Length: 424
Ligand SMILES: Cc1cc2nc3c(=O)[nH]c(=O)nc-3n(C[C@H](O)[C@H](O)[C@H](O)COP(=O)(O)OP(=O)(O)OC[C@H]3O[C@@H](n4cnc5c(N)ncnc54)[C@H](O)[C@@H]3O)c2cc1C
Image (cartoon, rainbow, N blue to C red; front, side, top):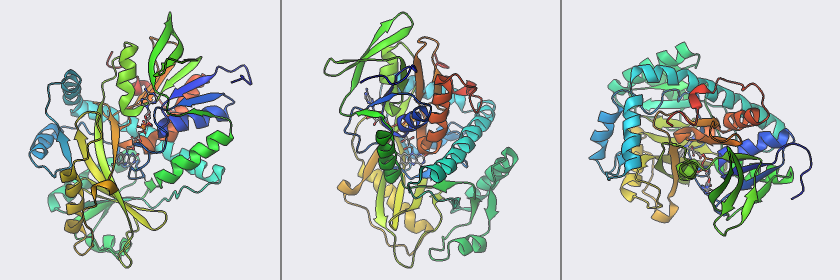
């Protein structure tokens, strides 16, 4: 492939939403880009997710009390959280780091960092939607946190107070106020918190159209190409090696391989603690007369429900830390579906057949912050990964930051807490 300008050629490993948005902003700056993807690029975590753009999610998963709650959930086969107990060094050290992050001091540091990247990303989605001209069903309708019990409503109301203090608008809604916003489906709950600044989109269409756009702008895609090794020259990665033994020369390299990132990082002697958090979704047609307008999270069940384009509705949830595998645990899927009638009593929904269940592996860092930045060890390596349950939300901001790092511009926000070598 001929180089068209003097800018370094960028190779991005990973064709998920993070790799694609990194390519988008880099190609806008005149870079020649190759995206290397080990699958045929037609599925993965960036496709079947809940499609929510969530500045409301400014609190990391690792908070005080989370471990105790997680342990209780582990004894319920249909609960929203599960860690498969196993003697695995990566899991044990990840768990320890999660524990170390789950305190008020760390959470207070993480919250503004998550807010800043979320708000930047939301703004970039707005610009992207107005500039690119393609429809990916981007809708700014907000997000409802539906609370079944008074106890979780009280807790959520105090989260809303923190959100407002941080500059993220949150409204505590009484049941009549909620029913005005959802007149057809009328949730049966104690109350709700509404985040008007959240948004949603149809991820399957976004990824497809973004790839088309990138291809038309000259970005090369090498699908079915797994990277299995690196050639190092001093503190520079000179080339990457594929599973068939080919080498690809690199000048700037971005690792955006989601849950697989620690496998590549390990080969480069970089400690990138991460666990794959498996989640499931299933998508139906909306039910006539019971349309959901606004995306919602069934709080106690941790189930996300998103109305999508083409009159679809997607139900997603669970966080199953069971390693990298494609096993579908139907108990967990049942847990998602069984939660629905508790919140929407007369909503007709059945457990889907296994072949209608989608799964994805969320790349979870222990402290809930992504890894974004150039490494000290290799001067031409940038890591962009670890976005857990917010990769879709944070993708434009991450792509923009990757571009700013490579173009040596001042990053749009402070990236020090996202340092990919923070656990080294
Ligand atoms: C049920 C569910 C619901 C979710 N809902 C939301 C939501 O509402 N909002 C939100 O923001 N996020 C959501 N997420 C999370 C979001 O989907 C992820 O954070 C995001 O997709 C991660 O993107 P990524 O590009 O980092 O990783 P991926 O999409 O996993 O992409 C990484 C790519 O790298 C490739 N790869 C790996 N190793 C190699 C290698 N060695 N060589 C070449 N290629 C390689 C993989 O094949 C993969 O395609 C949800 C996730 C799940 C499971």
